[in-house]
Image 1 (cartoon, one colour):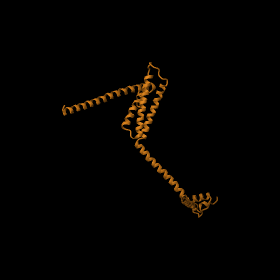
Image 2 (tube, rainbow, N blue to C red):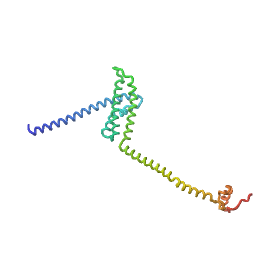
Image 3 (spheres, rainbow, N blue to C red):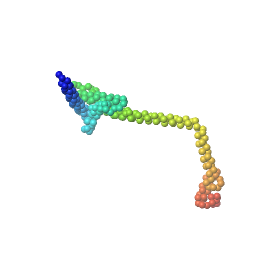
Image 4 (cartoon, helix red, strand yellow):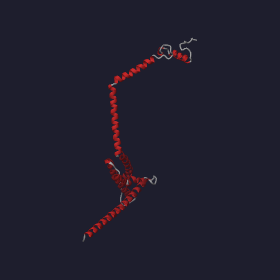
Length: 239
């Protein structure tokens, strides 16, 4: 066998191997789709029995907590999660929702009307409570996922440092006030004293006597007379 024949055989093997890999991916993809449709139908049927009075689309929306949530969080873990916290949340909820799919599937098969075996007494209770628990866990996971993003953590860390600087500045302000309290209070007291002296010497009626020394009735009369253009030093006739 010549070199050309060996090369031709190698290329044929590579093509055959590539076709096999492609075919196996297609088969695996079809199996995955069928299995997910099967579990999704069981989950939806169980949710319909748990929520009989709800709008017809509500049980289908509930798939996002179980089958859809499992796939969604898996995709997030593989392609979107950044940092150890986000990856841990995404992976944890992928596994958690997988357990929820198992719970819904078992509950519908066992409680869906079959007569071949007796259903465990607590299965229905656990499954019904599971709907609420899995819903809350996924909502909490979404909130925690966004809070643990690198951008959010960086912003939070910067804000914490800013807050620490503000606290230190406030402490420094308090210390400065305590160290200079006598000087500052002296300046404030001096200004207040000047305002006091100015008020004590006020003579609005212009009679040469500060208003603080005069009776209020006399000051009011003098101001009224002065306002009418008369002599503000004129005294009332007493009539």
